Length: 102
Image 1 (cartoon, helix red, strand yellow):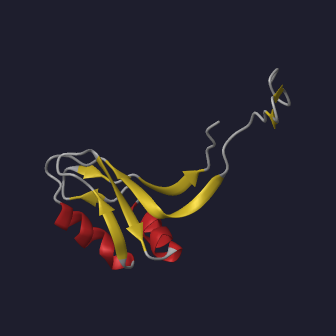
Image 2 (cartoon, rainbow, N blue to C red):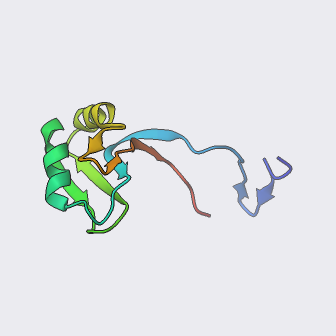
């Protein structure tokens, strides 16, 4: 708090939290070597058109980008805690945080 409002040259520092912004991209966790990209696509494309699937086999997480925010929200609400086979549950979020680099 001591730096809040402090001037650094032409910039004034503002200390606070990032602002959450809804995104078309959701994060999916709890994955592993047993997860196949085609299986992820099959589970998530029922909510809307997927424009990008970011997943390398063996990773513990993936990102699914939808064409619309409504599709991302539908996937999030229905897939949160959803088991994929008998291996793990999805944890999903579509809130990104705006951050600033100085």
